[in-house]
Amino acid sequence: MNYSSLGLAALGGTVASFAFGFLVFWLLPGLIKEGHKYPAVFRPKEEMMKVMPIGFVATFLSILVAAIIFAMNHQGGSGTTGGARFGVLIGIFVVCAFVLHNYVNLNIGLKLALMQAAAYFVQWTIIGIVIGLIYKPLATP
Image 1 (cartoon, rainbow, N blue to C red):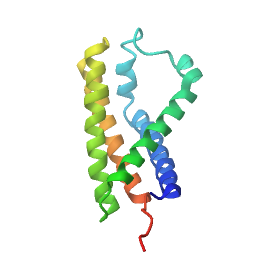
Image 2: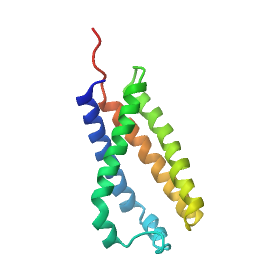
Image 3: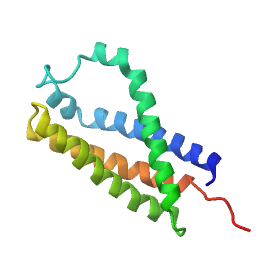
Image 4: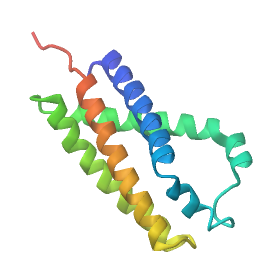
């Protein structure tokens, strides 16, 4: 496994994740507006900012783990195609294990859950593509 390439892939995926997240909130303010309907579920913005460093670290670690899984399973070929395939699978996993699970456990509406599902699915697909574009295995002699 190429550790320097792995680190770069995780860093690139993290940058892509936050860039996409900011873009979604900028282009789709309805997602934030929908979340505001559930003040008992979501922290106010000021309180979120206090714990945001935990979110940054957790995001990086989750993308690092995803990059490791990609590196362990990448069969060669196009990094873009492999990364996209990987990102779609991780996106489906996140939607089912996180978003829909939270819809069942948290008192949020279906509209918010579906909006989150779409956003996270696209976000993880992009992260997978970025990981696939950046990660390069070590050359074998």
